[in-house]
Image (cartoon, rainbow, N blue to C red; front, side, top):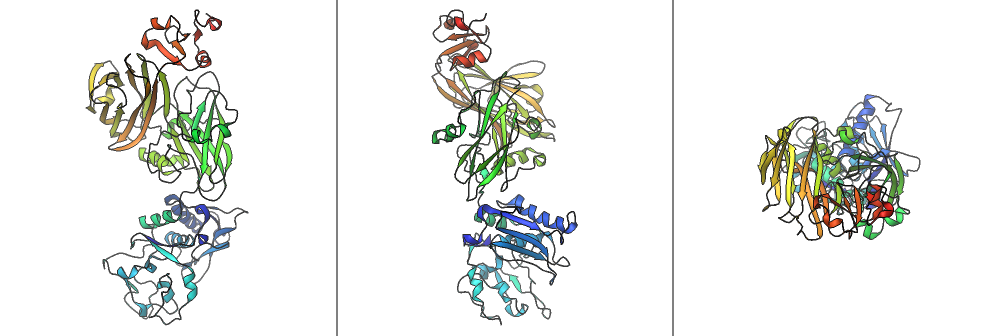
Amino acid sequence: MGLKLIDTNQLWPDGLIPYEINATDFPVGSANRTTVENAIAHVNENTHVHLTPRVASDISWISFTDHPTDGRCGGSTGRVDGENNIRCDLDGGFTMGNIVHEILHELGIHHEQLREDRDSFVTIQWDKITEGDCDQFQRKIEGDRLEVCEEAYDPSIHTLITEDVGAYDYGSIMHYGRTFFLKSTETGETLTPTNPPTAVIGQRNALSPGDIATLNDMYQTDAIYVRDNLTDDGQEPLAGGGLSRSPDIIHVVDEIVDPQATLSTPASMASDTLSETVEEGQTNFVYVRLQKNGTLTDDAEVDLYWADPSTLPTPSVWLANKIDDTKTATVAPGDVQIVGPFLFTDVPTTGHYCFVAIVHSRKNPRPELSASTTSLDFINLVRNKSNVAWKNFDVEDNVPGGESDMDFAVNAFKNTSNDNVLEFDLTELPKKVFAQIRILKRLASSATLKNLELDRETKLYAYYNVGKLKRKASLKNITLESRENTTVRLHLEFPESIKDGVYDIDVKQLKGKTEFGRVTRRINIGDFPFIANVHSRELHIANCPWVPKMAHRNKKPYRDLQTGLRQGYDGCHTCLLEHDHG
């Protein structure tokens, strides 16, 4: 894949590379400056490193200047304190690919044909190399000598001790071409591939997959991050776990007195169930938890957005719903920093909401959201960016014999598509739980159904019962219109015999076999101190004599009195007379 320097002192801390473009050589708005900016963007968009404009406190930086020479671009390999100059002859050799090549040198990557294993892949025609340039073909390993070249052996070359990374890469942007440094008096090649002889070498168009892998081997995602799930360690892309269950977006109905102390304990860090139901009619408080990898302290700006629950919350449905102002924080490596509270006011209705947090820092800037025009774009945004997190998970308390309705939106991007899948995973629920799906008839009409039986239809909707033997069901090949935004309901009825416990249910949206999003609900079945009647709007102590007379479907449990009262219930005249405003 590549040839990297192994002395970490020659690398850039946290993969953060300050730069400056000489304004005289490259005037703002000029085509030449755009070429440099495109090279920088190409590296930033494809690797873990980030080139960022230089500030006064930077002790090392890359400068880009014009240097009329012989049609080449040049620089050094690896970082040194102070200026690290990339110079290009604007009259020759000045292309985006050549600049990318030089940037990789500055980041600590050497020429591919200098790898220790290169003799198994190329033959060097030493006698055809231009005088004074044999060192361009000398392997950068200790003890390697130029026995064929006329020049004297230069021991300074061996201060750059390197290590092969992965397999040899003919397609690397760091590989020389067949005629590089060929004497003007010679014909033929200086560098000939052998395995196979037809290999194409010397491209200067773009980073190869091997180039990207080499850089990402050298530089981890050492930046401020917000987790996608409890196993997320901030590396890009996300290694595993769900995309829509961030434990670091925490919403509560009462402001936390000391959020830094409360939300940064080991127990808190290990939990993704700290949030409470969002309530209308009052201010809700949302906190975002940040961490930092690497060695440098960095500043962060945090933006928070909300949307209705959805299996795929496209940016179009939440970008207009920003919560509060942008918040800032300074995060040191290894620390946990709590940002907020964000004040969530004007809540449409009490219930579950989806939240998206976006973190901007110098190493990991805010992504360009307008570039997310497809489902894959959005999922890559969340999976491949450690500074974007999505929370679409809620917890509902319920009782034996109770019922639950889970409403969620099914969204689509601009183009119509017919390869969408909705998958319902109810495997944690006992077989006696009745489950029914309500979906628009036009969405179900073209779908292939699995473990679903039609119960009834209305003018708009079809109702399907989920089979009890297998607790997974799906609708495949659903046709979604451009910018689709429609609601699906999962209705559950719990038997009186259900055991107290925790039951997670998932609804996933897929394209083929690729998951693009999900909504997760955790059902807590148990005994609670207060029971509300959703029909009469009365709140009771659990042992009130009126509670056994309620229909089970009307029971709504509460862990505390104030939450029930705050959500509009009136105290029972028998057991909570002091709260009966009847």
